[in-house]
Amino acid sequence: MEKEKIRVIVADDHALVREGIVKIISLEPDILVVGEASDGEEAVQLAVSQEVDVVLMDINMPKINGIEATRIIKSKKPEVNVIALTIHEQEDYLFEMIKNGVSGYALKDIRPDELIVTIRNVAKGQAFIPPSLIQKVFEEFKRLSRTRESVVNAFDLTEREIEILQHLARGLSNRDIAEKLFISEKTVKNHLTNIFQKMGVTDRTQALLLAIKHDIVKIEV
Image: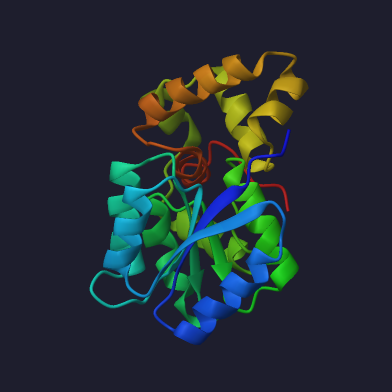
């Protein structure tokens, strides 16, 4: 039985960049480009109207920018994973994209093989932030953080839920976490659902970044 392909939409208002990305990822046997968008409005229409796993989303686009397009897509189809594409100087947009549900954040100077790996990992539910931006994330969340004890109590997280969040911080998938904790993958998903409800978020990326922000877990680098 043939393995199901990762269905991808590429959204970028620069035709040369967009076509280059499409050409690169289309060479992979497990990735299928199902649409191209030249603006944010078109990206939303494509993502909402068809089956898609990952949207590669440029941030600066006409009509609707990538930040707003991501928010709309995630509100209508939360199962769709969005990877933000940006140039290095736009790294401050990282926090806005995270708040709107982005699953990955890739700089446009990323190597083709790294982009492919990012797409595959994000399609599996993992989050990705470039190593070069990790320190900036820490600095921002440190500035905004409160004490760990008060926040944990506010979220009413159990020790097991904190343990699962820590494994998310290590980049583990649900299956990997299940194996580590000797529980079923379904149990991991149930814990994540409880975590999302307690923290007031809708996906694992938001939960992880909120946990880091409030010093509930730490990323090991």
